[in-house]
Image 1 (cartoon, rainbow, N blue to C red):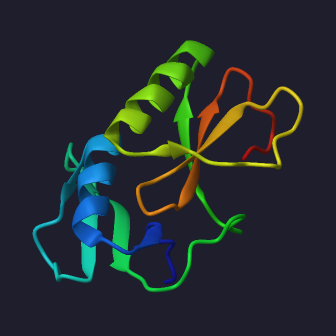
Image 2 (image 1 turned 90 degrees about the horizontal axis):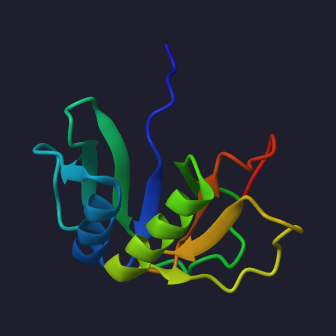
Length: 128
């Protein structure tokens, strides 16, 4: 039976990406299947796989067709998480597609991959 796995992010610097995403999402490196070009990150609580990081030489897309949405419950939590992620190495993305009164903030990880921090208290049926 076919099952959906977990998202994989292409990165230039695997150790840097591991440091960022484990701190950002409270993940841990899975003990099996590690290599210099691939790391699987698990939920720290042992509930399973969360994210794959794969060495990539392709350029980062300015407006990727697929991205991660990280969810928070309030505007205050969104603001705090955005600042925490920036302190960990993320940056505010130069995003030119914001709608009026967006429910999301677009950031980029240390490799330039964009992702959104979505405030569910303002979220419409679709975001980011």
